[in-house]
Length: 310
Image (cartoon, rainbow, N blue to C red; front, side):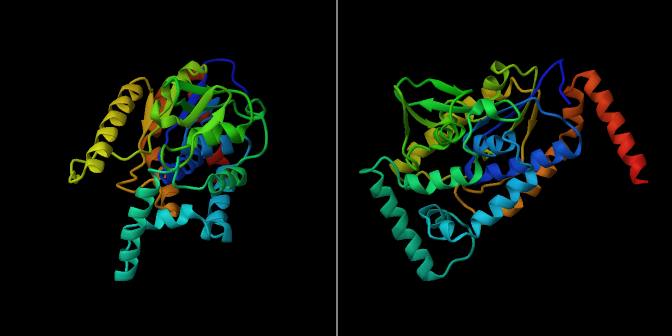
């Protein structure tokens, strides 16, 4: 059903693997009959949001993730190899030694290349999840947020190839090479907008439901090297920008992702349930944020479903 009144927008934030919790959010919104008029995604939020906006159900996206993680293609990828180094699971002495050596190998490699991940690895993942369509063809209006490394400006894609826009939005600096697009050199949207609340407002949303899947700023950190200090400084900047943008959201859903690293696939299956729980915990706030006529229709729908069940 199409609504002619106030629009409800969903702002899906970045966070690598933690973005799988977005699927749980979408699951509960569908179950509760909460219709979304437009979706804006950053990084992982662009990948999951783009898949959903193109017409895939949360279950279809979930099944694709499960199949991809079991595929020979993923098993042989650098993406999996690097992800394993961040897993907190118990490791043998030889595995720990290998992790130590590989971490330093990738760190040194970063001084000589634009990225530590082969572009083909991530492009194949994007192509696996997303159809080859123009953004204007999505069933739900969709936007992907990226950052131009040349001008420093936030770039919002509202047209053009869906796959290319999502790839640009997901190009984490250092991990993936930036994407050349005309005069722009595009990298991860999280540089300028980790949770794209403002972009969702700009796209026409009157009510914005924001989903934050980034880790909270930890106070237990090691700063023994220059690399540690630089990384910490980046975390502080990102946290401040994110907090400023989240102030403009009507509802903030915060899946409890803990300290899961953005490339650690070891707990990917749990993240969907975590997203579902966070959304259920936020249902009262979500309902209060909706226009009155939507609340009435949603209440009527729930009443009818309950009567039919029993």
